[in-house]
Structures are given as structure tokens and as C-alpha cells.
Image 1 (cartoon, rainbow, N blue to C red):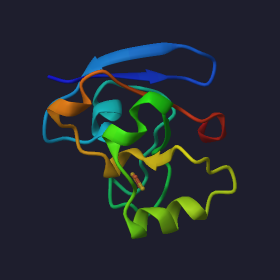
Image 2: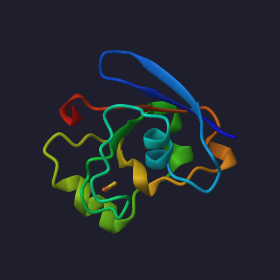
Image 3: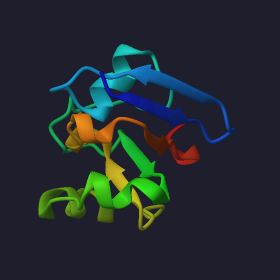
Image 4: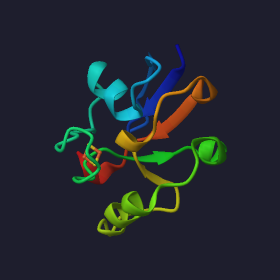
Length: 106
Ligand code: FES
């Protein structure tokens, strides 16, 4: 299973084995990672699953869709590497992925 590392805004790291076919958001919830509420359950309509992709992983994760972009744009704290973790599917190529959790989500 691909390993994903979540880094809290205070620097605390948690690495988990993420099941293929799930999302980066689901993996966080299943492993009780704080900072991801996922209020809409993964529908892409709440933006409470916001993560900041580690710079070295941006190209592998890919670009957000148009609808994801619209949701991200509603957040004044959005950054260039912002993504909604419910829109990132766990695939073998994401083994080693590092995401940072924004302070504004706590
Ligand atoms: Fe709501 Fe991702 S869980 S947008």
C-alpha cells in the first residue's frame, strides 16, 4: 500500500499506509489524522479537507479539476500547492506522498 505522510502545522508527522482506491482524505480519516474534517464526505463541496502538497510531489499529484479550483478559490488562505484531499485518489505512483495540513483548518 502507498505510504502517505501528513505533516501538521506544528511539524508533527504521521505516516500511514493508504489503501489503493481510496483518497488522501479517506486515508486521513481512517487513521485519525487531525486537521481534516471532511464535512461533505468527499463530495468536493466543503473544502474542509484542504491540504498543501509538498513541492516535490506537485507534478505527480496533478492539477485540480475546474470544480475543485472553484472551491479552493473560496478560501482566502489558498496557496499555489493547495488541493482538496478528497479529490486525490490513492494510486501506486503516490507512494511516499507528503502533504502538509494548514493551520487555518484547526
Ligand atoms: Fe468536502 Fe473534500 S471532504 S471538499
